[in-house]
Amino acid sequence: MTSLGGCASRNEPVGKSMRVIVDQTIPTHEAERLAALKDMKVEIVPSHKIDPSDSTQLVAGANIVHILAHGFADASDPLLSSLRLTAQRRITAAQLLSGPWQNVQLAVLSSCDSGAWTRRISNEIFGFPWALMVAGADNAVVSRWRVDGPSNADWMALFYGELSRKSSPAAAAAHASREMIANGRRDAFYWAAMRVIGR
Image (cartoon, rainbow, N blue to C red; front, side, top):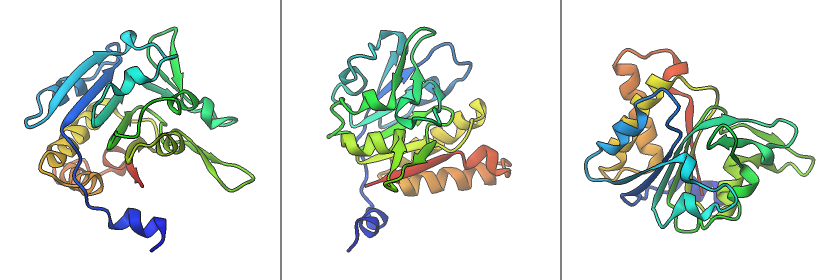
C-alpha cells in the first residue's frame, strides 16, 4: 500500500484535549463556539501569551491544537509564511518545525491562506501543511483562501461537533461542508475554504 493509500484509508478518531490559541483582536465568535463544545476539554489561550521563539507553548500536551490568527502567505519562501500572534510578533512555518507535534493528532490553522504552498525544483511542496506533517502532526486543517469569519466559525463548530462523535477529521470536514450547504451557504466560498491533510 502506498503512503497516499494509507492516508486515504485512515478512519481514526482524535482525542478530546484541545488547546485553542486565539488572537482576540479578530472580530469572530469562533473561540466562544469552540469553548462551548460538549465532550471536549478546551483550553483557550490568548495569542499574546505565546512566545514565537518557543513553539512548545503552542502544543502543551494537547491532542488538538487550534490556532485562530491572521495568516500571511509568503510566495517567495513559503516556510516564511506566518501567523500573527500580536501586532508585533509572528510565528513562521519554519518555527513550527521545532515544536513537539509528535503526539498532536490534529492541528487546525484557522487563518487566511494557511494552506498556501509552493512547489520547489525537487518537486517537494513547502508551507504550513508541510511543516506540520514533518514536525509530526497526524492531521492538519488549513485554508485554501482568505476565509469569511462568521461562516468559518460556523464550519468549525460543525466540524468539531462531528469530531467529538468519534468521526475522523476527513469525515468531520465532509459533514461540516454538507451541513453548511444544507443551511443555505451554497457558495463554495463559505464551506470549502478548509481542507484536511493527513498522514
